[in-house]
Structures are given as structure tokens and as C-alpha cells.
Image (cartoon, rainbow, N blue to C red; front, side):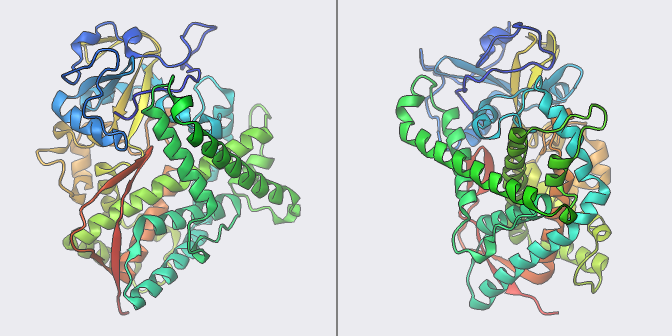
Length: 494
């Protein structure tokens, strides 16, 4: 289960009316009138529910195992809370219909509200700051803006490669997830906010990363903890989480204060400048200081955590599939020629490298699930009545493995699944690593450009050697990340 308990934050509807939706966790019992038609695991225990065999540290992978057995729609219950899960391609396609369904903020997302509030990712649909921030910040991801970020991305990638050159020369294996986290944190911090965390000058993760991982892990623990017991069982963890949130807030406040104090002639035109100086083009509204803090935290956390996971999974698969690595490297050499620093336009021409990235995101979407709620009473799949405000959790990590969409061997790594003809042959809405609809990730093009650029630079520079005996293990902290992944590097000549 992606989560079996829920914070009691109020949950908004796509079209709320005064008091017309229940507050707090909305269990499936109230919203799915024919719930008995949806299968659940056997051996349900009275009062506590489907807890036999539950793995609290890996709830997503737990749900994958159960979903494979129960089918494209199933339910799980724990401590009185019932959740409907969907992963079948046809049903997920219906849930992606924006006229019938909208984003539902629940589960782990709501547990991040104490730190991110009404930021873009965690805002409820009825909160006005979501649309305000989206309209102000969307131009920050335009083609011209992205071209402006490209030199900074190259500079941070150069820091990574200098670090990896040292490891290659010394014969040391590199910590792939740790180094990808440093890379992506520095990239979003410098491009978006003009801030340098100095990650590659540190032997240990920056305290911001430690606090960020702490808040994500705490939200994950809250997901699988009965709400009534959480204050007792997580007392110490709640204090640590409060300290982590306070550190994140202080760090962001310092970044914003430094920008406000800077000479106006030093304006960069980046995301932070837009937050501070740009008014909504129609209403003239501006983001409040509190919301600016929440948006900065949202971008720093979401803007690096998911991309670092995507890069880490891609490097794992490249190291394990030398034929794919060779083909990707040949494309880089052909497209970039002898250029040491590729231009912005050259990155988009790396179509096979992008397929490698997409296939890695298919198998392990670093944001593994998203929730959708009904805008009005409807029927899902022609079988399951759904009341307005009821919701389901779409397991993207299983949707991406549905044989109906991906063929008889969906567990195999094959970048050619994303060749143009193969994409056209598939039904829509079966590949959702960045969510769906109006609330899909605003920074997805930023992440894809950064990740494609970095993969290509690393392929050109190194041979990747997997450590003997390593088997992929996936850690969960709301996002997914390879655990214990280390690679040895051989610096290529030329």
C-alpha cells in the first residue's frame, strides 16, 4: 500500500461548495457504493484490516505484489481506513480524464503540508495560491528560460565529473544515488534560486538534504501509522521532524533574504526573481512571503529528489545492459561530434538517450503513485460507481507494467518501447512518471533536459562497471531510489 493511514488535513474538491465534502481522511466506504465488487487481500483481520504480511518500509512494493495478484483495481484496509488502488491501463485512462477527475491531495502528499503548505505540489485544488503560482512561474520553464539554465547545468555536471574523475583515478566505486542527489540539488538551487550549497565540496550530504530526507521519511512513516497512535509512537520522530522543518524554513528564508538585499541590477530572471517581483498578468496579485517560502521549498525538494532517482535508475540499467550503453554512446558521439560542451539544442537530438531515461522511469517512476478524485458522481470502467469527492490511488509503478499496454514481458528493460512507432501504438495515459492533467509536474521539461544532458556527458566520459553481486533494491521515502547502488568507473580516452 502506498499508505494505509492519513493525516486529518482537510481535503479539497475540484469544485468545492460550502461544507459539501467531508473533512479529513475520506475512506473508500463512503465514496464507493459497490465496494464489495473490488477484491481485497485474503485473511482480513477484524478491526485492523489487511495487515498480515505488510512491509512497513516498502509500502509501494508491497502494493505492487498485492496488485499483481488481485488485478487492475483492488482495495486495502488498515485500522479502519479503506483505500482503492488502480493500475489497469483502461481504468487509469478514465481517471486521467480532467472532465471527470481531478488531483486528490492525500496520503503522503498531505503529510508534507506542514513543510510545503499550499506550494504547487501540495496545494488543495480549491486553494487560490496554486493557480496564482502556476501562472506566475510557468514562463520560468519556457524554451528561452530553459536555454538560459543550460550553461549552469553544464557547470554543475562538470563538478560531478571532476569528483568522479578522482574516484576513477583512485579505483574507488562511486555512490550513485548520493552523487546524483548532490548534482540535482545544486542544479535546481543554482538555476532557480542563485544559491550554491557547495555539495561537491562536502564529504557528507548538505544538512538541507539530511533535513529533506528526514521530512520525506517521516511523511512515509505517518502513512503507515494509525492516526490515533502516531502522537504516542512517533513522539521523538515528531520532534526531529519539527527540527527538520525549522531548518528547511531557515535555509530558504536566508536564500530569499539574500536575494532581497541584492542590488536590483543583479536580477537574474530566475524562478526566485519571478516569485519576488512578478505579478499575475491578469489580476496583478503577487505571492505572499509565506507562499514564496513554500514554493522555494517545493522546488528545492521536488526539483531534485525525483530527478536524482531517475538518473540513478538509468545509470543502473545502463551498467547492466552494455548493448544499450554502446548504442546510447554512439548516438552521443554522432550528435555532439567533438564538442566538449554541447549546446542547448543538441540535447533534444539525443532521442535514444531520452528513451533510456523514459524506460528507466517506466520501470521505476520515482514518484510512484498519484491520487485522483471524482468531480461528480460517475462510474469507473462501467462497473464501479464513484461518488463526488471519492478518490483512488493510481499505482504508476504497476500501470507502467500492465501487459495490456506494454506487452508480454513488461519487466524487461527495453528503451525501444519508446520508439515513435511503439508510442503511437499504445493507448494514451499509460506512461505517467510526472502525474497527470493540470496538476502534472510543472518542471518536467527541466528535469528531462537535465537528466538527458547528464546521462550523455557521463556516457561519453566513462565506462560503467557494476559491482559484482549487486541486485537492485529500491528504497522508499515517498519517492523511490536505488539503495546501495555503487558503480566503478573507467575514464575513457579521447
